Amino acid sequence: MTATAQTPTVPDLAALQARAAERAAQRAGGQHRLRGHIVCDGLVRIFKTEGVEVVALQGLDLVIDRGELVAIVGASGSGKSTLLNILSGLDTPTAGIARVGDYDLLDLSARRRLSYRRQMVGFVWQQTGRNLLPYLTALENVELPMQLAGRGGGRRARRQRARELLDMVGVGYCADRRPGQLSGGEQQRCAVAVAVANDPEVLFADEPTGELDEATGAEVFAALRTINAELGVTIVVVTHDHAVAEQVRRTVAIRDGRTASEVRRTARIGADGNTELVAEEYAVLDRSGRMQLPAPFVEALSLRDRVRLNLEPDHVEVRPGDRARNEREAGA
Ligand SMILES: Nc1ncnc2c1ncn2[C@@H]1O[C@H](COP(=O)(O)OP(=O)(O)OP(=O)(O)O)[C@@H](O)[C@H]1O
Ligand SMILES: [Mg+2]
Image 1 (cartoon, protein in one colour):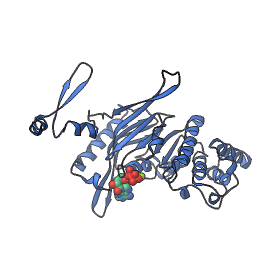
Image 2 (tube, rainbow, N blue to C red):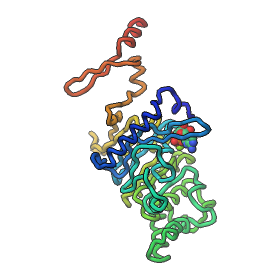
Image 3 (cartoon, rainbow, N blue to C red):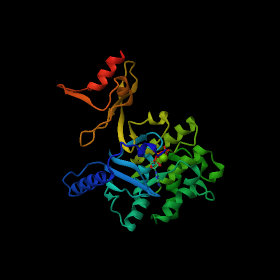
Image 4 (cartoon, helix red, strand yellow):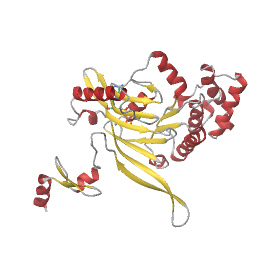
């Protein structure tokens, strides 16, 4: 699983860290203040275990606007959970920029980290058992974070809000049951209500439908969409489920610790008068002008080592370099 992060294509670590630090210093000066609710720029996370270094994120760039609902997809080990752990304040990046609202995640005091995690973000885990306390009812589970944060209005107001949230995600009928008396999908929908109990600005979910079948997963996803639409919470959800990824306007693919490509879907009125979603795939171009060609394109033209670029009036052509062309012609 760690193989992708340890291949020889990994750039020199010292150079990577230096570059990220340089950028961070530049941006912190306010010269290039990046817009967006969530901003990652040149984000690096290196894990060191028993002398081995694993570069889980190697200069990841990502900007998410307030109120967006974004799906993150990518192969196992590509860095999705690492990214979410950083953004939710559970882990600290090695270098780069990670900012959510006014919080700079590379420079958080213990006190500010606590307020960030209590007030700014909510989290839903893949493991249903990790999201809810087993000895509390669904309603009490939603009330608890409000109580811990000292949310005003008294017990009745908290209870009423808890009921409203459970209704919103479609499990109002589960209010008085304990997690053990709920299906996996019902538990995850309750977990969504718990995660937004304190009105966070952002909700992160790491494969929240990973342990569920497709139909139940779709219900949980519908709950996330409702929360996004009704409360305006920015949502970032990691998923392996293509059916889920296809239901959002924006899907970001991570490869080897970087954002590699993005699919954006826009609504259009079709010939039959019905609204249809049109998907367009984009490669992500970083600030230095680097991008990743999709693997099928590379294979189709046997592109290797060097390619030729031509600037045309409205596009750029990528042609095989001499070696790949010679090999192809020799093989033909
Ligand atoms: N605490 C850690 N210590 C050492 N290496 C780690 C740690 N956490 C993650 N890694 C490594 O970082 C890389 C990215 O891991 P991550 O968990 O972010 O991947 P992922 O995209 O979430 O994968 P999956 O789809 O399997 O959940 C992997 O090579 C992983 O082994
Ligand atoms: Mg993961």
